[in-house]
Amino acid sequence: MSQSADDRLDAFANLLRIVDRLRDPGGCPWDRDQTLEATAPHVLEEAYEVADAMARGDRGVIAGELGDLLMNVLLACRIAQDAGAFSLKDAAAAIADKLVRRHPHVFGEVKVEGVEQVLANWEEIKRAERAQDVDPSVFAGVPAALPALLRAFRMGEKAARVGFRWQDGHGAWAKLDEELGELKAALASNEIDRVDEEIGDVLFSVVNVARHAGVNPETALRRAGTRFSERFRVLERELGASMKGRSEAELAERYRAAKRVVDPDLRALPPHAPVEWLEPVRQAARERRLLLDQVRDLPTDLLGKAPQDGGWSMLQVVEHVGLVEARVAHGLRTGFAALAAAGPIAPFPPEGLAAYPPKNRLHEPIERVNAPERVLPSATVDRGQAFAALEAARVGVFERLPELVRIHPRALTLPHPYFGDLDVLQWFEFLAMHDRVHRGQILRLRAAFAKDGS
Image (cartoon, rainbow, N blue to C red; front, side, top):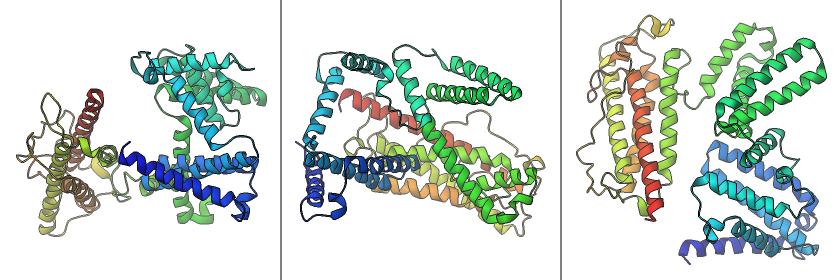
């Protein structure tokens, strides 16, 4: 057993001792007073807090929330043990047996090809298990207490795994269009029962579209609610009680402005930045987050390995990205300094880019940027230095943006000292494209190492 496995068991045993101490005679009166029924809301609440932390992507918070959930699981098992019902040993043995039984391709001789076959086998095994149950339906394992949107999603998943599904997203879209038409007719009829039914059908159809798109609708709706809450709070702070007296057009415009305040991808942009800036900056920021998510948890033992057919290692990819983006940041600093030295500059015109269109918008992919000379397949790079350079370059790029968009539109066509006559928007389009390429490279490397067992 590895040292890391020992550490996990030691930490788990320590938590188990703490929970036992809380329930033992002389322990905590509150914990000793709990019942299984009383702990159910706490387990549910902690699960939601875990899901919320995962949606925010805050890894430090996720660890703490998972710990809270684990504690509640252990407490529930100890409560059941004290009541003579079952123990943690029984719960752990039951799930261990189930995992082995439902993974014959791992613990047995069954051969599978891909995730779809794994899921199909899983459902077949569960169907055989349900033959002993009172309710043999594939939906028997979907809790009725789940949030309605999540329950519809799980039901769609289970029906699809036994063959009841659209072959592609077009069928799901067509069904949604059909249900929207029926909802419009129901609204025109003013029959409340019919409207209620058709709204339910529309929502269920939206869930199917989300499933075909690979999106969990419960998570998507939760994030949408969070975004709306943050934007609406901006309006509340700005308008207060006077919101009721504002026109629909003014409120819509203020809401659009609030999106820029709270959208993490657009916070670098001042409120008056032209709309043409939004998508290039949003895409660059999105690709930045996705790439950083990939490189933050790169396995140390694989960082220096290069693919068998030659090419860069993962760490060399990280170093390359940092060096290239340091050049972009240098270009922004150089261009801004040149404009500042030229004397007073008019602020960005309120009419936006329509009056000053950039000269060379990027429609076709620009030429591939060659690797810096010091990044060679045989190079040895330091993990800490490479990651620090990458983070510093990102800050250098985005911290110049608020200054740059406040100045005259001629800044949009400043030549970059390394990349030639690229305008500022093209720089951000380049960053998005560059990050997307190298994120794909890292994903392929990880998949290759996983496949060959390296």
